[in-house]
Image 1: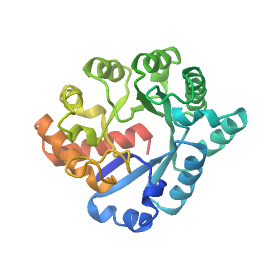
Image 2 (image 1 turned 45 degrees about the vertical axis):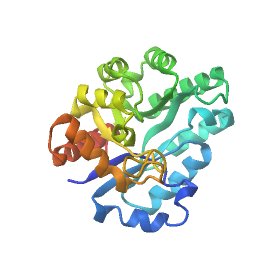
Image 3 (image 1 turned 135 degrees about the vertical axis):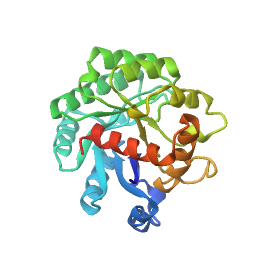
Length: 255
């Protein structure tokens, strides 16, 4: 069994020098499949191109909270069209990010609700981005019955208490490079607490490279470091971490 990377941004300009070579080499390096995630209208368009070109690349259509200022009714119609394309497996990444102040919180919340409605309409799971917005994210997801859609809390960064809330709603938690950081104690505690059956692996590449490559461009090739750390925390073999998180990813994205 090989690794499934549930959250990548291979359309990012950081990959312009060697994108094709890197993607073509994933399989021989133990990476079976990746999901390229839309973070804006343009990156969702780029994602549609990638999923057509590479058989092992799947996609998500959506607009990141900090990019929601670009959204309109017309673009929501286009996102619905994009979501209907073969190999688009989720709506995302969507949510709230109050770390960056743009656009204002009211705008982010409005488009978060609209994109959750799109997921309900299309029958796709959601990829949730939540940063410095723990209570508001959870409140909106409960109000909108997001448990009906299912999906993943991407790059989970909160504590065990909030993890319990999302796990009880049936969501998966996306675990990536941060779990390898020496200051990642909160996430290590979450990984120890949570069932492996609700964990998926992700890079968020080109961001969040794990130790020992922290600070460098990230790619799916770094996921064995995450597997190693999860294996150590859980006290289970690496092969089991890979197999179960791969199955989880396929179940979550209905592949």
